[in-house]
Length: 213
Image 1 (cartoon, rainbow, N blue to C red):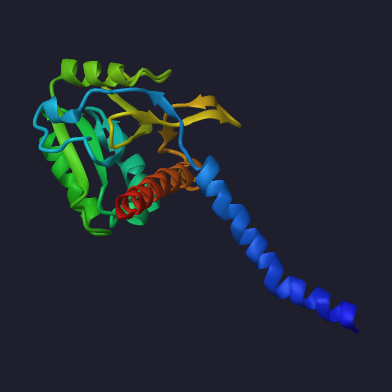
Image 2 (cartoon, helix red, strand yellow; image 1 turned 60 degrees about the vertical axis):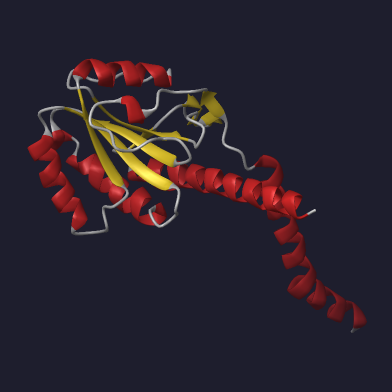
Protein backbone atom coordinates (compact mmCIF):
# COMPACT_ATOMS: atom_id res chain seq x y z
CA UNK A 1 0.00 0.00 0.00
CA UNK A 2 2.84 2.36 0.88
CA UNK A 3 4.54 1.60 -2.45
CA UNK A 4 1.35 2.38 -4.32
CA UNK A 5 1.00 5.72 -2.52
CA UNK A 6 4.61 6.57 -3.33
CA UNK A 7 4.04 5.83 -7.04
CA UNK A 8 0.92 7.99 -7.10
CA UNK A 9 2.68 10.88 -5.37
CA UNK A 10 5.61 10.60 -7.77
CA UNK A 11 3.35 10.78 -10.81
CA UNK A 12 1.27 13.65 -9.43
CA UNK A 13 3.97 15.87 -7.97
CA UNK A 14 7.55 14.91 -8.69
CA UNK A 15 7.38 14.14 -12.43
CA UNK A 16 5.80 17.52 -13.34
CA UNK A 17 8.57 19.31 -11.40
CA UNK A 18 11.27 17.28 -13.14
CA UNK A 19 9.67 18.01 -16.52
CA UNK A 20 9.52 21.73 -15.73
CA UNK A 21 13.17 21.83 -14.70
CA UNK A 22 14.17 19.94 -17.84
CA UNK A 23 12.37 22.33 -20.17
CA UNK A 24 13.46 25.41 -18.24
CA UNK A 25 17.04 24.23 -18.50
CA UNK A 26 16.57 23.67 -22.20
CA UNK A 27 15.45 27.26 -22.75
CA UNK A 28 18.36 28.65 -20.80
CA UNK A 29 21.08 26.46 -22.28
CA UNK A 30 19.86 25.69 -25.77
CA UNK A 31 17.26 28.33 -26.54
CA UNK A 32 19.37 30.52 -28.79
CA UNK A 33 18.69 30.97 -32.47
CA UNK A 34 21.97 30.90 -34.42
CA UNK A 35 23.31 34.04 -36.11
CA UNK A 36 23.79 33.24 -39.80
CA UNK A 37 24.76 36.72 -41.06
CA UNK A 38 26.25 39.48 -38.93
CA UNK A 39 25.33 43.12 -39.50
CA UNK A 40 22.85 43.23 -42.37
CA UNK A 41 21.99 46.63 -43.83
CA UNK A 42 19.46 48.65 -41.83
CA UNK A 43 16.20 49.26 -43.65
CA UNK A 44 16.20 52.76 -42.16
CA UNK A 45 18.54 53.85 -44.97
CA UNK A 46 16.41 52.46 -47.80
CA UNK A 47 13.72 54.15 -49.90
CA UNK A 48 10.74 55.51 -47.99
CA UNK A 49 11.58 53.71 -44.76
CA UNK A 50 10.32 55.22 -41.51
CA UNK A 51 11.38 52.17 -39.50
CA UNK A 52 14.63 50.61 -38.36
CA UNK A 53 15.77 47.12 -37.45
CA UNK A 54 17.65 48.47 -34.44
CA UNK A 55 16.21 47.24 -31.14
CA UNK A 56 13.43 45.34 -32.93
CA UNK A 57 12.78 41.71 -33.77
CA UNK A 58 11.81 41.96 -37.42
CA UNK A 59 10.29 39.64 -39.99
CA UNK A 60 11.52 40.88 -43.38
CA UNK A 61 9.89 40.01 -46.70
CA UNK A 62 10.11 40.91 -50.38
CA UNK A 63 6.74 41.07 -52.12
CA UNK A 64 8.02 42.05 -55.57
CA UNK A 65 6.29 43.94 -58.37
CA UNK A 66 3.43 41.49 -58.84
CA UNK A 67 1.66 41.54 -55.50
CA UNK A 68 -1.21 39.44 -56.80
CA UNK A 69 1.17 36.49 -56.79
CA UNK A 70 2.24 37.18 -53.21
CA UNK A 71 -1.17 37.94 -51.67
CA UNK A 72 -1.54 34.35 -50.47
CA UNK A 73 1.90 34.49 -48.89
CA UNK A 74 1.02 37.72 -47.08
CA UNK A 75 -2.24 36.19 -45.85
CA UNK A 76 -0.39 33.12 -44.50
CA UNK A 77 2.11 35.33 -42.68
CA UNK A 78 -0.64 37.53 -41.32
CA UNK A 79 -2.61 34.61 -39.92
CA UNK A 80 0.15 32.30 -38.75
CA UNK A 81 2.92 34.65 -37.60
CA UNK A 82 1.84 38.28 -37.33
CA UNK A 83 -1.38 37.65 -35.37
CA UNK A 84 0.53 35.42 -32.97
CA UNK A 85 3.26 37.93 -32.13
CA UNK A 86 2.31 41.50 -33.06
CA UNK A 87 1.36 42.45 -29.50
CA UNK A 88 4.96 41.99 -28.38
CA UNK A 89 6.39 45.46 -27.96
CA UNK A 90 9.59 44.95 -29.96
CA UNK A 91 8.15 42.86 -32.81
CA UNK A 92 7.48 44.15 -36.34
CA UNK A 93 7.01 43.18 -39.99
CA UNK A 94 8.91 44.99 -42.75
CA UNK A 95 8.07 44.32 -46.39
CA UNK A 96 10.29 45.76 -49.12
CA UNK A 97 8.45 46.51 -52.35
CA UNK A 98 9.51 48.29 -55.56
CA UNK A 99 8.35 51.83 -56.14
CA UNK A 100 5.27 51.92 -58.37
CA UNK A 101 3.38 49.29 -56.37
CA UNK A 102 1.84 51.74 -53.91
CA UNK A 103 -1.75 51.17 -55.05
CA UNK A 104 -1.39 47.39 -54.95
CA UNK A 105 0.11 47.58 -51.47
CA UNK A 106 -2.74 49.81 -50.25
CA UNK A 107 -5.25 47.25 -51.52
CA UNK A 108 -3.39 44.38 -49.88
CA UNK A 109 -3.06 46.28 -46.62
CA UNK A 110 -6.80 46.97 -46.63
CA UNK A 111 -7.60 43.28 -47.13
CA UNK A 112 -5.26 42.14 -44.38
CA UNK A 113 -6.56 44.87 -42.08
CA UNK A 114 -9.99 43.22 -41.98
CA UNK A 115 -8.40 40.43 -39.94
CA UNK A 116 -6.04 42.18 -37.53
CA UNK A 117 -4.59 45.55 -36.50
CA UNK A 118 -1.93 46.36 -39.13
CA UNK A 119 0.10 48.79 -37.00
CA UNK A 120 3.19 46.54 -36.99
CA UNK A 121 3.13 45.88 -40.76
CA UNK A 122 5.57 48.27 -42.45
CA UNK A 123 5.86 48.61 -46.23
CA UNK A 124 9.05 50.21 -47.56
CA UNK A 125 9.03 51.41 -51.19
CA UNK A 126 12.48 51.40 -52.77
CA UNK A 127 14.30 51.50 -56.09
CA UNK A 128 15.10 48.17 -57.70
CA UNK A 129 18.83 48.60 -57.01
CA UNK A 130 18.21 49.40 -53.34
CA UNK A 131 16.16 46.24 -52.91
CA UNK A 132 18.78 44.14 -54.70
CA UNK A 133 21.62 45.60 -52.64
CA UNK A 134 19.76 45.14 -49.37
CA UNK A 135 18.87 41.55 -50.21
CA UNK A 136 22.53 40.84 -50.99
CA UNK A 137 23.48 42.02 -47.48
CA UNK A 138 21.52 39.09 -46.02
CA UNK A 139 24.07 36.70 -47.61
CA UNK A 140 21.69 33.78 -48.07
CA UNK A 141 21.44 30.89 -50.53
CA UNK A 142 18.09 32.29 -51.75
CA UNK A 143 17.56 34.51 -54.81
CA UNK A 144 15.01 37.17 -55.70
CA UNK A 145 12.90 36.46 -58.76
CA UNK A 146 12.64 38.69 -61.84
CA UNK A 147 10.02 40.82 -60.02
CA UNK A 148 12.30 41.35 -57.01
CA UNK A 149 10.18 39.07 -54.86
CA UNK A 150 10.58 35.82 -52.97
CA UNK A 151 8.19 33.68 -50.92
CA UNK A 152 10.88 33.44 -48.22
CA UNK A 153 10.88 35.71 -45.18
CA UNK A 154 13.72 36.30 -42.75
CA UNK A 155 14.21 37.00 -39.04
CA UNK A 156 16.45 39.97 -38.15
CA UNK A 157 17.37 40.50 -34.50
CA UNK A 158 17.76 43.73 -32.52
CA UNK A 159 21.43 44.00 -33.46
CA UNK A 160 20.81 43.66 -37.22
CA UNK A 161 21.85 40.01 -37.45
CA UNK A 162 20.07 37.44 -39.60
CA UNK A 163 18.90 34.53 -37.45
CA UNK A 164 18.04 31.04 -38.68
CA UNK A 165 18.89 27.36 -38.35
CA UNK A 166 22.26 25.72 -38.81
CA UNK A 167 21.08 22.12 -38.71
CA UNK A 168 17.54 22.09 -40.06
CA UNK A 169 16.32 18.56 -40.74
CA UNK A 170 15.18 19.50 -44.25
CA UNK A 171 17.45 22.31 -45.42
CA UNK A 172 20.64 22.12 -43.39
CA UNK A 173 21.42 25.83 -43.03
CA UNK A 174 18.04 27.55 -43.08
CA UNK A 175 18.20 31.26 -43.83
CA UNK A 176 14.51 31.93 -44.47
CA UNK A 177 11.03 30.50 -44.15
CA UNK A 178 8.76 29.67 -47.08
CA UNK A 179 5.55 31.66 -46.62
CA UNK A 180 3.72 29.48 -49.17
CA UNK A 181 3.92 26.63 -46.65
CA UNK A 182 1.56 26.91 -43.69
CA UNK A 183 3.25 23.86 -42.16
CA UNK A 184 6.67 25.56 -42.26
CA UNK A 185 5.28 28.73 -40.69
CA UNK A 186 3.51 26.73 -37.98
CA UNK A 187 6.19 24.15 -37.24
CA UNK A 188 9.42 26.08 -37.76
CA UNK A 189 9.10 29.83 -38.01
CA UNK A 190 6.72 30.18 -35.06
CA UNK A 191 9.06 28.10 -32.90
CA UNK A 192 12.10 30.14 -33.92
CA UNK A 193 10.42 33.46 -33.14
CA UNK A 194 9.42 32.08 -29.73
CA UNK A 195 13.06 31.17 -29.13
CA UNK A 196 14.41 34.60 -29.99
CA UNK A 197 11.73 36.33 -27.90
CA UNK A 198 12.60 34.08 -24.95
CA UNK A 199 16.29 34.78 -25.50
CA UNK A 200 15.77 38.53 -25.16
CA UNK A 201 13.45 38.14 -22.18
CA UNK A 202 16.04 36.02 -20.36
CA UNK A 203 18.79 38.52 -21.20
CA UNK A 204 16.63 41.37 -19.86
CA UNK A 205 15.92 39.49 -16.62
CA UNK A 206 19.63 38.76 -16.19
CA UNK A 207 20.55 42.42 -16.76
CA UNK A 208 17.94 43.56 -14.27
CA UNK A 209 19.16 41.01 -11.72
CA UNK A 210 22.78 42.10 -12.20
CA UNK A 211 21.84 45.75 -11.66
CA UNK A 212 19.99 44.86 -8.46
CA UNK A 213 23.09 43.25 -6.93
